[in-house]
Image (tube, rainbow, N blue to C red):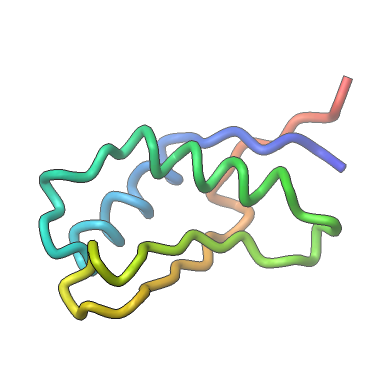
Length: 81
């Protein structure tokens, strides 16, 4: 399996999602969300598994958990050394 690293596309996808679903988007740390996305990508058992990020309901405008499935093309991929 390869190692995923966030890139500018990852940042844009996550920023758009936070702006859309968060109750207070300005209080969210984008770097923390990037870390969560990288962890999700790198913890998959198979490259076929989805890369999913979840925002808990207390932080969302809807009051319900919101998830984002990030496409693998939103990351840079490197062979494990």
